[in-house]
Length: 364
Image 1: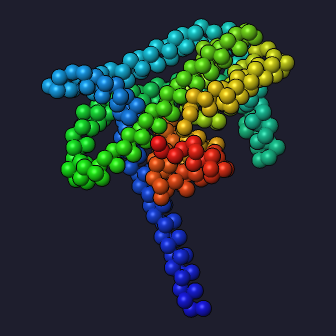
Image 2: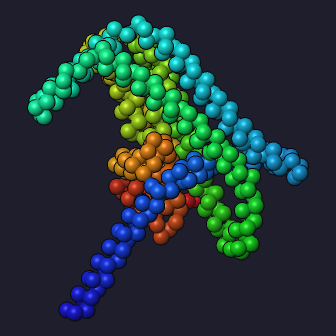
Image 3: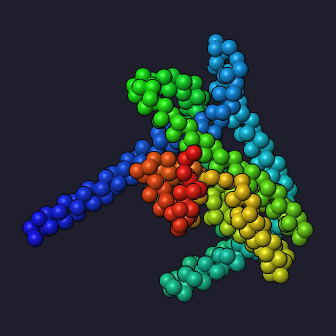
């Protein structure tokens, strides 16, 4: 009896120690956010464009090896330029269409304020002082513009730091590989490099598949919504493309916004038809085209995705929201390549059959 009690106490102590260690890690991640966010972003950028740099480096003389990382960063800058150009184009189109909807937007703002005041009065016994829809709308708009400008300034500075760190990572990668070889030895290093290469390839495949699916989904959104004359077509298509990087949850947000626009613009019957078409698009992309493009790729459980979004958003704010899915996918892929940790990857996956999970994720 005494021995059993001793084992129980040891087990309980280990669990408590593990819990305290997890809390300490979370606290450290939150406290070190100003340092870890740029490093994480730079790491993902470097992993994504590393093949470009390697391709160029293998085709130039050794003394020009620096052209490889520079070509990789030029690729990133080209993607950012296309992204910024798309935002500018969409902004111009939206700015041209907003005045036509100013009265409708003002009316919807007033209805929303009235609904919120009604809930406050019903549940809190507070009338809220009578929200002024006009003044509230103007003040909210000015506050939104100021917040957007501040966020844009911070985002630009963060992007510059991330790109600089990514360039350093690409330049230093061969040097660090040699250091690892000399530290671990050729045999152990070969095993490690093989695993890391497989992890990086699967992560890049995730980005490629998500980008391809996002482009197709965005084009289908624009085509379907244009049949009903829904405004802000390119905005909805662009959002569908961006939100496609968040599996399962992103598709819900991408479809909800144009449906609400259809409801405000054309009524409930049109909104239902729009919603039905978008549902078909998401089902076809998610259940037929997506799996065929993914191949042997680990799929994450929707619950894990939502939990990771909440966790990383809590730790790192808006940057955590952007990095949550890539970090979760990278962690799951890494776990699936370590035999002792594959059960944890199985828990994170969307599979309930262990054999199907093994067949889908077993490293080749």
